[in-house]
Length: 93
Image 1 (cartoon, one colour):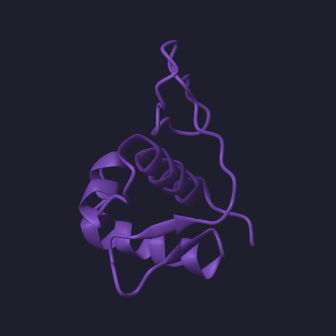
Image 2 (image 1 turned 180 degrees about the vertical axis):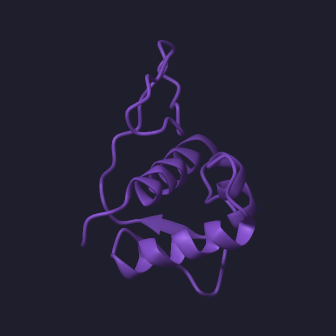
Image 3 (image 1 turned 45 degrees about the vertical axis):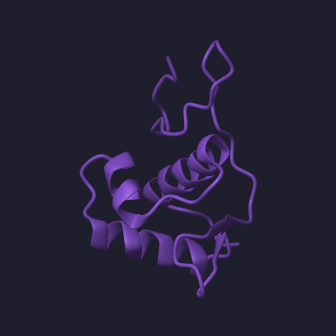
C-alpha cells in the first residue's frame, strides 16, 4: 500500500468507524457528509484512490460494500463509542 494523503486517511477512518458502528459500509453521500465539505463525486474519487492504493476493496456487485484492508486507528469516546471522524491533528474530545 502506498501512503495516504491526509484526506484519504480521514475518509478511511470514517469508513472503518462507520462500519464498526453500523455494521455496513457508508454510501458516497454519507462519506461526503462525514468529510465535511466534500461533494458526492469527490468522495467517490477518494474511495477509488483508496482502492487503487490497496487500503480498501470495493465489492462491485454491491456498491455499498467497502472492505477496509488496512488497520487504522479509530479514537473512542469516554463511553468507548467510536468517534469515527476526527481529522488528523484534532483532539477527539
